[in-house]
Image (tube, rainbow, N blue to C red; front, side, top):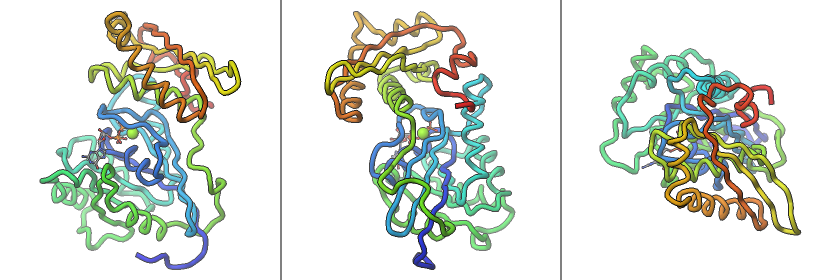
Length: 308
Ligand SMILES: Nc1nc2c(ncn2[C@@H]2O[C@H](COP(=O)(O)OP(=O)(O)OP(=O)(O)O)[C@@H](O)[C@H]2O)c(=O)[nH]1
Ligand SMILES: [Mg+2]
């Protein structure tokens, strides 16, 4: 699909979908660098994360959102809001589905929410690098929700994707540019993200924890960056607290004789040195705090608040 005009375009594109469908992987593939964390555990993304793509055609501000899921504590509510508020503001929505996973109740809820929008929707059928995808089921579901055939829909495109193998990313960009309005860039064209450094650092540590923890534990983990100080030239001291909900979880995070925490700290430090381009001393503490996911003031400190 060719761009209809040669005028510079600029707009916002939200990437929405269930947890674990590959939204963050897709954003990183589009930007060509890691701007948002990825893990095999659902509900990895907790905030809106912007990835900014610029080329001669224009600038696209992609917004990665937390996967839409059911949940009742304050962090769940915050994540839900972070996802849903990104929808009406967008010039175009990428509605990503996992063709390897059966359609569930939450999927239809998302489809219903998107159906009534005036905004163009691109349904990204992701994980097509695996075989026997459920593509027909997802198309049927969308047609049922919309009450008409895909071929009769305006402002709707179906696109098979593999975010992990970066298949069809160029095609996706062509389609998006076609839908964007003309406009001046909102960010300098050499910037790829506007996430605050503290949040990037906290997320990188969280990603490493997710890699080694049992599946149920990641939802109980929050990271606070207590201190970031340059100590010598080209050296940074970073102190961070890992919040969990119970003492038993604290023991798991620390591991036998501190083995887990050491491994996590080492991997996080390597990534942080890469990110900050300095040497890093990383001090990690673990604290058990019952029901921290509902503690408004701690959520604020951890960056999960609308007022910041
Ligand atoms: N095989 C395959 N796996 C993928 C693909 N895209 C993402 N994944 C994997 O799916 C898992 C979830 O990826 P994420 O990008 O974290 O998913 P998400 O939708 O951002 O998840 P939440 O932030 O929890 O909502 C990870 O293990 C990815 O490696 C793909 O195209 N193919
Ligand atoms: Mg994500």
